[in-house]
Length: 456
Image (cartoon, rainbow, N blue to C red; front, side, top):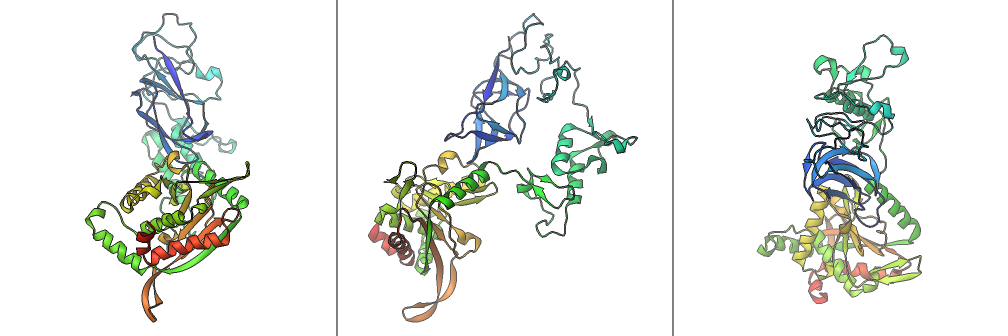
């Protein structure tokens, strides 16, 4: 007989309590194998693919895309014995969270009826039990008529499928104002999207007519002038961490303007070197190496202040964080044991972190246990800044844009490549003297990379 197993949302890492359902990779009626990816979730730290712990046939998806689900809540039901015969006793209680019967089995689970696999929509959880009685088999759910306001009595009701009605609600579109183009006068998804775009206030500078992915989960106001987007996952966690850091650690920043012309020459030579042909060499790579060398000379900067225990934890390793701006918010993955890596291997590590961040596949492990961080504000054309410390760390380096500027070099004014560095640090751990020495060492390597050979 069929055997129904429920898969409960697991903790994706580091004691997370909830996650958002981003995308189901399977549907009701699909056959799945053990370890086959079945859905993608977004935690407070990253996007994570969840594999199936069972092999069998999907009988029910218990949560919808876009929902926030607590860890431990059931999310899918799988029949692990789909070839088994149904029990003869039709009055036997149905298994918890059972799905549709196999087509043509002849047996009917109470409250479900006989339907083709994959064609049944799950009943709403808040629907009365009487509404979940057996329904006749249909190849596809009939379009649901939109409820008309009392003042609209006598008008032709709007025909639209449930997903289209939900889309209209999410986009703030009144279905009665949409011109249907579907067969039989059905409002299609395209009709709703077109109407939503027509409602956009084109005069606002923030709307250029292009789709904005960060607005997709929001609700548009009736006049189309605002969109409310719930704060979730990465952005929520980032906001909480940054507020805690800003109001817990006393931040101090020091600045240094540096001639990095020799670093730019080194970057050019490394790009032509065959040993570095498989990696992308940038000034950020040299800055990262310079920071690692500075930490080696001043290891006390690589520490954490534990307020609860009134302890300072000095770390004998460097997990180098690289702040990355993504559509989902700011994340800070880190290169593990970066202090052990050669320049080539460090370039590989940075490239891997960047690729995963852009693809949205950064894992919680990639962002855990960071010890010191670089934020490359120069990529946005910014000269410098005063970055907030990543929680649990004592220092963060801001690497500004590199510009050609007039500079006094060997007693003459010449055109040189110049950048600005800023080091923010936790004044409980790092005093002004230590912070200044660390920044001066980073600047020294960028000004003359030969120092790296001496210190390394």
